[in-house]
Image (cartoon, rainbow, N blue to C red):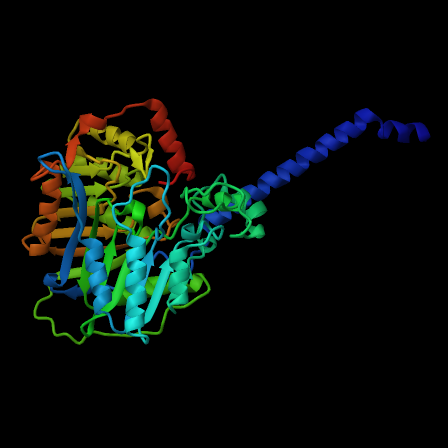
Length: 498
């Protein structure tokens, strides 16, 4: 009996037992992580995230197209045309009762090689504080992303100034959203998220600034989830009614020279924006100010229809527009990132039907003083051009340290003209219910002034009218199989910032 017991606990048998237990433990851990990955990828979204707003009708003269451009003049000098934040600051100066802002990048962090054309975060902070001093009773709701405090590992002087001035600041709770990084995020949710963060215990170099203090490892570990409230939207009362501005631009010094687009709209469409932003506030444990303003303005004409779209609803609208395009239709795209596999598939199909498609892309070479490797735009451009035998035409925006950060999609078929503008890049992370995004879709007559202005903007860049804006496809052409493989892996598994 004793010999059997001794044999059972022999070194050889104990090794087998321990190894089997280790394999079982490892298997259980992997199953757990898989379950977390599946749940966090497909879980229910908070109420009114993935939001389709009500359709509004109004006169297209109440819609303005705005843009920022950085380019070379015919004489080789850098030119900055900026309209978006000048308009937004003007609207702040006119507001008397309510301001609602949701902005992704809102900080003055500056990396070693980063250049700041304009300190937009300080300007916006000053404007809001000054308006609050002038009209103490005005309600101001300011929503932003936790990247601006390095996920609670740093202190944002802009946010602290707003709070101390009585402005209601809401930092978005990204944990309520689905996870785009399906390999890393289950590990973060299982092992790391419970430790919180501290803005006083930093020991590691700040990821965005050479002048600000150190941050914790937990800040970097949170950053690797690659998830954001990426919206850029503004609402305010304006001479008795409401005005809304939906844009691709951030109030951020390092982004201040970027080229961007925006639409400003007068009227009740702000109510859809309010509903979409209330969803962000409530999932973050807060609520927007209780404000209501319904326009009583009598509309003499209603030649435009408008909808607010968020998250996956943006993708559905894009696919619908591409699918409805016929051989006599045109599609024009101006984008910072284009990588979503579904969008690519439908563009290829539209080209096969004879749709005239032209695309202006950022070459993905500049990022806040650092050089990028061209992924994903150059690989996608090669696919679109080669698979359609150059029927899809592509040009690159000629950047000089800044980025072509616009997010604009337009289509025209017959007399109908449709445009979609906002925060969303054409990527899986931006369109498949991982980020918070907000766009506006406007449908007008092709002959309308608004449609003509937007077409002139695109044609100006495409044809290099009164400046050097874009260069030929061959200028940044890439057909690297390795980079194409990296792009597909990063896009499919969420292992990137695009």
